[in-house]
Length: 380
Ligand SMILES: *Cc1c(COP(=O)(O)O)cnc(C)c1O
Image 1 (cartoon, rainbow, N blue to C red):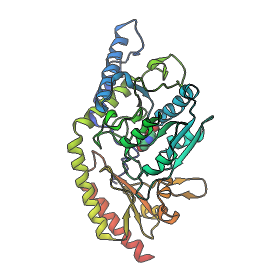
Image 2: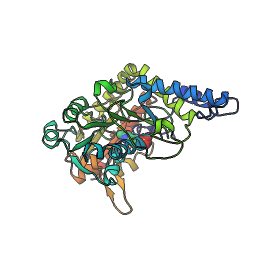
Image 3: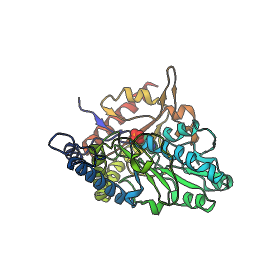
Image 4: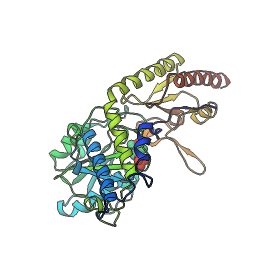
């Protein structure tokens, strides 16, 4: 049974061009050496691959290669940014406050919840999911060390006004961290156009492999204390043998994402328009959040439970932002923060597109959604 895949915000299939690049770094006839081995050619070759990748990822986001720290993904990057800056800088600056939003990814929220010696303020978004600059202005002061706000929300696709937030943070001497996991190839930005000091990146949301990411750390503006100790790799910010195949895979994925982004955004917008017109025709469905990136669409189907809807469409892979605890299902914290009721939250679905999404898959989605919603409505 063919599955139509609409869960690209949770992960994407790896581009075949990326797989080819990765394969060449694994076997005895390839670049398998330890990039930290300085005593023989196999180490030097691996190190050259890693540095090509560092320059490539840096170029994609408008950074200097020395500002890229390899990590295992955006979760680790979020942890390293927030914990690392707090540890390295709070004593020297006398600042211990962090401002973030209720709609952040759990990698930011859970990290903040476990901090010791910091005060964390969680901002509620406006109903459209965006940060209210006035409420930030009323809360930010000289005790704030770090503001952490994501560029693209992974559940709604809402884009935050990061350049404005960065300016407000800098005006008061605070740093800005942004989770950029959903942003590569889907929006036009650089670290300078955003004005960020720290940025979390992940490969597998952009057709690269899982288990690899990076933290962008602006030179001269901040210090980050290592959270994983070992061989003092990555200029003392993150230890561990560098996985050449993963790193090269991430770089190739980012290179392709950047080279093809204009065409890809057009393509994704066209597919999304097809889905949106079908939804309009069905009626009783609302789109959540201000329109942001082309590839993420979050909808609430009035009066229909999302779990039932998904169960009735087994060949369509979509998702809810809900967290399943042992006994109950909790609606998405993002939608709740935007003011949706519990019931509306439990009637909400995320549809996310990617490079491999086809028109046929979109037709399958529209057909299944139309049929299932009508059936469940007439049964109600
Ligand atoms: C997927 C995602 C993460 C987690 O990234 P990993 O590389 O899987 O650790 C963090 N933040 C956002 C916004 C994401 O979409």
